[in-house]
Length: 505
Ligand code: G3P
Image (tube, rainbow, N blue to C red; front, side):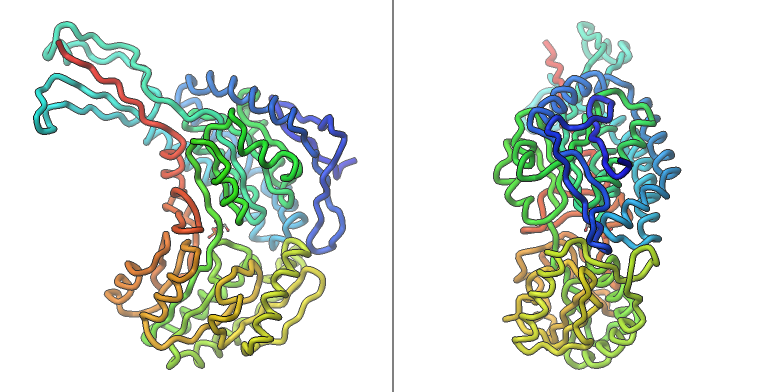
C-alpha cells in the first residue's frame, strides 16, 4: 500500500511490531491521506541504544567529513523538493508554493549549518591564570568547542616549561543523543533546524515528527539516508504521543531535547531530567502602530504576518494594537487587503487554506463566538466550511474577550484600539507569551524605547515578526520558550565546553 509509511531505525525502513498504524487526515478532504507506524516503547529503546552507539564514533569523525555529509544531504533535500512539498500540501494544507519554499529553505539551512559548525567548532581558546587578580602564571586553560585532537607546537611550551609537551588533547564533548520534536506547521524546516546543528556538533539524532507532517519528515530523513550517514546516527520514530511521548522525553538515554510546539512543551520541561532543553512554544505577537507609522506598510505586514499559512505560525501577528486616531484608516486598509486574499485548497496555492485539524477549526470558532457574544465588530462575515475558515478581522476587541489573549492559530485577527504607547506596552507585556512583537513608527528613538520595554525575545521595527533568516537568533521569553534558536545558537546549545588545565610545577 503506497499510502503506508515505515519508520527509520538503524539505517533501515521498518514496520512496527505493534502492527498498528496512525492515520494522517488530509485537512482539505478530511479523509485519510497516509498512515505511519505506531511504534512501541521497545522500538524506542532500540533506537536510543543504536543512537548512543553511533554517536560515539560520529563524535570522532573529523569535522570536515561531518560537514561534507550535511552538504550532501542538503543538496539531495533540494532535489527532492517536489515530493516533499506534495506531502506538505496533503498533510498540513500548506499552499503549494510555500511548501516548495520550506523544502528549499531547509536545504539552505543544512548547508549554512555545516559551514557555521566548521567555523564555531573549529575555534579554541587559551587562557592564562595571571589575568585574574591574585594568580601567578601557573595555569594554562585550553578550551575548545569542537573535539580538538592536536599536536601543539612543542617549542611554544618549551619556552614556558620544558616539562610540557602536549599532544592529543581531546577536549570537547557533544551532548550525546538529541531528541528533536518539530511541530506540524514546519515539519521539515523545524526538523532540520534541530537535526543539522546536532549532527555537525557530533551528536546523534532521534526525530519524533508531528503526526500531521510525519510523511514529509520521513521523506526528509530519506534524503539524509541517501547522503550516507552512519547507521543508527539518525532515526525517525512515529506513533502516538500518548504511547511513546513521555517515554521518549523522559528516556534516560536522551541528553538534550529540542522541541517546537504548543503547551506540551511546558509539560515536557517539567518532566525532563537535568538535560539542556530548547523550547519554542508559541506566542501572541503584538503589532503596535503609532500615529506616525506608515499605515500602508503596516497594513501589508499585517496581511503577511497575520494571514500567511492561515495564521498557523508561532510568529504570526496575533493582535493589532493601534492608536485610536489612526485606527479607522488602518482598519479600512487591512479590510481592503483581506478582501483580496484567495481562499481554497492548497493545491491551487490559495492564500488561506484549511486549518490543520477539525479540532483546531473548532477552537478558532470558539474564540470567534466568544468575541461575537462580547460585542467585537466583525469586519467580514464569519464563514467556515469544514476546516476552511475565511480570513476575519475583529475590530474593537476588548481585554475581556478570549481572542485578546489566546492564540487562535488560524486566520482570525483581533484589533485593540489604544490611546497611548504605555497602554500598548502594558497589553503586550500582560500576555503570558513573549515571542516577538513589531512596531510601526517613523521615529526610531521611540521604536527603540518601546522595543526595550517589550518583554519579548525579538522586536521587529517596521516589519512583521518572523523567525528567519534561519541564522538569526530566535527565542521566546516567559511561556514562549527556553533558550535561543537560530543556527549558531543551536550549535552552541548542543555542545558543552570542556577545559583542560595545565598546572605548572
Ligand atoms: O511557528 C513556528 C515559527 O518558527 C515560525 O517561523 O519562519 O514562519 O517566522 P516563521
